[in-house]
Length: 284
Image (cartoon, rainbow, N blue to C red; front, top):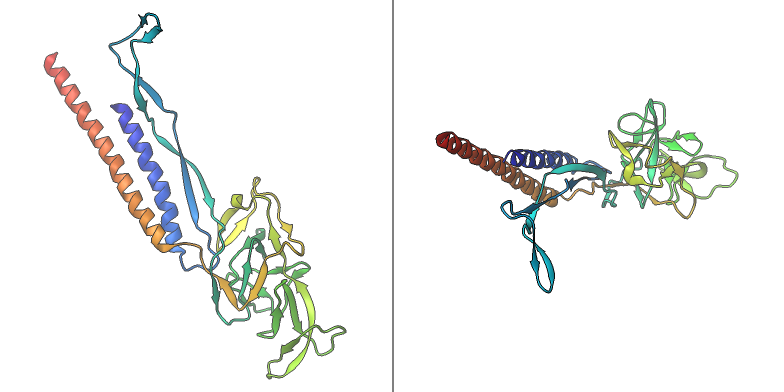
């Protein structure tokens, strides 16, 4: 019966982990580029249960022998937290009409410069910084393959391959036209290409906060995705969170019921032990 306490307590602890990840998912249901967390668990080894009053072996002529203490079932010994991983399933596109908003349609990450080193994000809700660089909402510069991206306010264009074009009155090889601030059209010149990174095992990236990810020993180092393997870049769109609010609410209800069930297991075990001790004391 004491084992019942430990088994029930391990189940309650597991549901706490699951509740934390579910609550975090619900809190970020409207966060652009957020990817839901999933917690997984594994059971401790099960124990085989035999009848205690029967032991030894009996003969069954002419078939051989039989066990006098047959197995009557299995006893679970609890559960433990195994892994919290991120589901990088694509989120739905949201049109914003803002030229600074970018979305990746496919696998890959924007590269961002931070005081802690290079970090990666799926949140393409950017803005123009005070120094004219394209930045995240936290003020971290977005990187191109040649460094930071200095653009002009509402006067640049990003094509589907991630090439960043800016206004230039005299371009040797202009490939497209960009609207000036005075609503006239001018020639465009290629500034840089977005530094879009990929990873060998992206599920092992570590969340850092502010929609940023950092590499781990299992994810592998970031690699710039080559042409043909890059996601499509959509300007004027952001990627919605891949959290399904209805599913997360259902998970929360399941967590609550499972937690209460484990509480009942502990209460029942405690009651049975109390009865056993009182009966033994009375007989003694």
